[in-house]
Length: 170
Image (cartoon, rainbow, N blue to C red):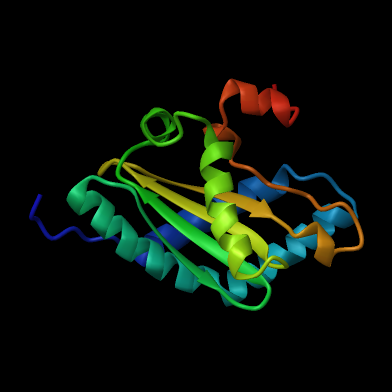
């Protein structure tokens, strides 16, 4: 494809904000969820615009060449991986997560934790099939930086049945 593909970072931000609001609403109460909510509040204020600008650039590449693209940003306490997919969720599950989302996630975590093993990890995923777009989110807090068991947030729509059973969603 040689057409000039336009991807609006503000549209990605709206998708991301909507997804994060739905994910957050499903979290229980308690210390771990309170920490995660505060983490998300700071993430939205400090990092989400940058993530969506980078996501828009990657999505333009994905829609132009029909392939998955990724980039990452990190600072002293957070590693954010951004992945874009030129397809819908169901197609991505079979095309990109054939061995499960955990296999995909673990390969990214190995890179992230090499940079700084004490970072909290966030994975933002954008999917677009040229008609519809979706956002997904993974939060993997670094337990060693917290004095309690953290709340992990996974994109359950991407998990295989086996993975869903593994984390108690099935």
